Image 1 (cartoon, rainbow, N blue to C red):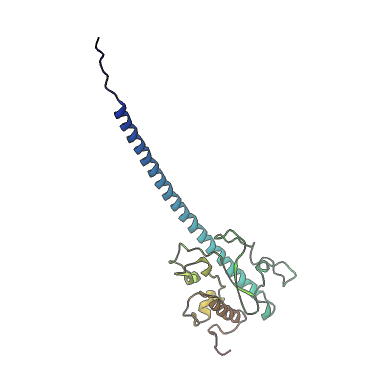
Image 2: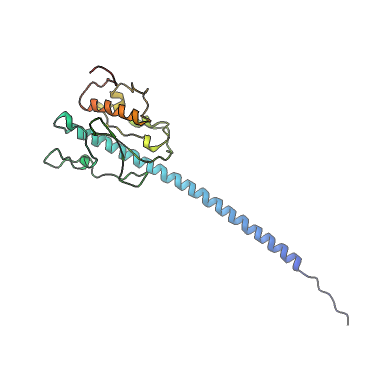
Length: 213
């Protein structure tokens, strides 16, 4: 009796498995792209929230430095030597606090801050030690307008405000030394610190470096 040959399905099954594999790879690629986009969006949200926190903390430092200067008994006590002196003022027997606590830098996660000091070693400004690039580079208000276009968080230097609500930079004549820019170098920071120290001692609010005293 003659046997009847049955058609093989090996070829069609292999083709089907190939399409299934390609489909799975496409799904995995789409999921990966979606996850990457989600991570990027979440990272941006977190960074912007940390920036808002940094601006808030910086304003707290401004107020604290201003309060410390106001509590001075003489012109040599207007700037603290350490940030801890803002939490508990060692100049007075009673407890005086200008900060509730020593804040953690939201950009680095550490309590260590960059300190801008005057010629006598007193702290007159505070800034983050982060060298990361800010997300926010425009749209600042008030004294934070000095941060426009800065490329690193360490260039966001928080300086106290003058009496009457004007900024330190306004008080010293709109930035006579450096065309109004926030200092971008150690030299510039030293110049601004010296001017600020003169201001905190009650000197003329329109003096610049080299101006007659």
